[in-house]
Amino acid sequence: MSSLEVISKDNQKIAVKLKGVPLQYANALRRVCLNGVPVFAIDTVDILENSSVLPDEGLAHRLGLIPLKTDLSRFNEPSKCDCKSETGCTNCRVMLVLDSGDSDVTRSILSNELSSEDESVKPVSDKIPIVQLAPGQRIKVECYARLGRGTEHAKWNSANISTIVDTDKEDEKILTVESTGSLNPEQIILAGVDEVSSKLGQFKETIDQIQE
Image (cartoon, rainbow, N blue to C red; front, side, top):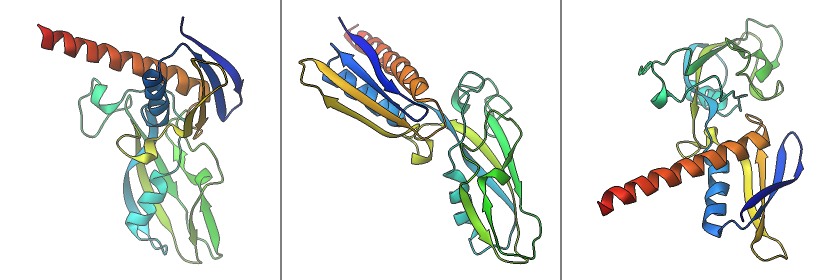
């Protein structure tokens, strides 16, 4: 009888004991928890003004790597959204803006200056550095975030680490997942289980079709 038991958890990390789960399925769950659960990340950046030392592509890269809080119950992945639009809609895309304004002192621009049109999708921390501006320098950007998976790009990884180790008991393993902050660790595990189950169902359907 297969079972899953939570042995420790906090806001960032969870460890679960897997009993009676074949290694290939346990490893599939580990991999899905790392990069197969969708989370939000900035995907498109419109640079309206940038007089900082960072080139436009460097600024866009920095913004894309900021982990964003994610609500999977409210938003769709673009490929599964009813809008079927390349530009997206309010059900699959969120806009964030940043305008540093003018300053006569050197200062660091942090993630708390990113303003989101939806409060459920925002940086996981207010203290992530983006760029340092000298007097007279300014950045003004419009960013568009969407759901994606780490298999497409690492900025969509839902976890920093996802590991499996054996215990001293036969047929028992410990899965440890550390979240990037976009989702709670237990959300990653639950979404990972659903994802593995879905993939197995799709694989079975494909095999059945081949056999027919």
